[in-house]
Image 1 (tube, rainbow, N blue to C red):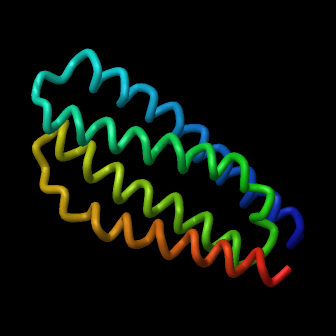
Image 2 (cartoon, one colour; image 1 turned 90 degrees about the vertical axis):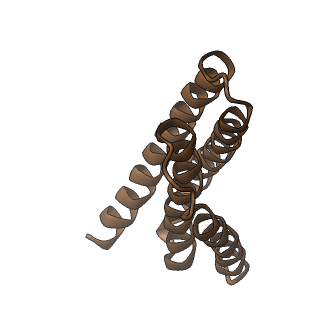
Length: 122
């Protein structure tokens, strides 16, 4: 039962990463072709860069989700990306404040360090 649950954690993290990467492509295309404001375009490009990079990382690293610390770190990468990239995208597209971006960025850094720590303890 525990092995089955761990396998599902890797599967949903990989699926979430793929959705992030696909969304990033759409954001980037919209930024390039549908946004006139240079600041909004820059924020969308930054959001798409982070979403794509971390989406690919989640797909590539999802097999490490069978261990507790790496799994927690990957969940942190997902949440951090949603906060950081989501805040920038919502600001550019909807005019919402981008106050969650720093929290997302901090969570991304902490999650990468947690992943390194978890993998070094192998």
